[in-house]
Length: 224
Image (cartoon, rainbow, N blue to C red; front, side, top):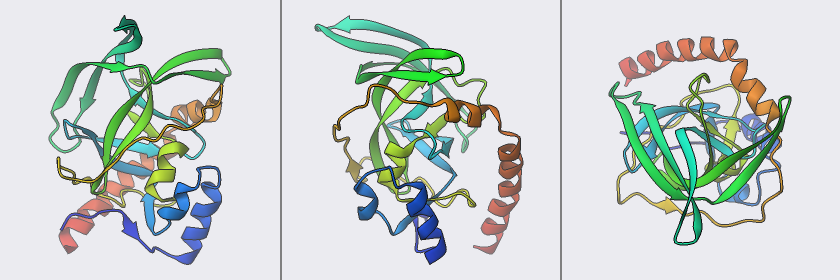
């Protein structure tokens, strides 16, 4: 039976999650029974391509690997043209698709290298058995370990974050799965993601964790 988001791990873990996500908004109270790991396999909809996503409470806005990013005007509105090239963790096939989406906003990034502007669009991801329409900044993450990063805005919709566990959910969405549509909120002028970029670059410990959980997944399959 497919796993959704795992409920009720422990009182200590819930307390830890509350501390980590204290800045994620009132939605936390509505999803406090759900726990997600710091790495999860999610699917990008509507294609259903499965990717590993890092859940990072140090980042505010989620990020997705995208190439050939271009801004253009359409019907007097700003749009973004970009290409997704994502390797499916389940099938080992590669999704390559060109997309056009309305520009939701510009993200101003302040880091060690100065200021940078990144386009933000709305895209759907499946976590557990629910689809979420979320903000994603687009950038080339080819050199990063994870093609997707989920920040606090998204984590606040998912539940509590366990910094010690990975792969607590199994993406199992279809067109009839519930959709949590994006709700506009007041945006800040800047996102300070210097910590996020450093975390993406410093992944030696995370690489080892990924190797360790492969054995755990195998053990879970054998015991099922």
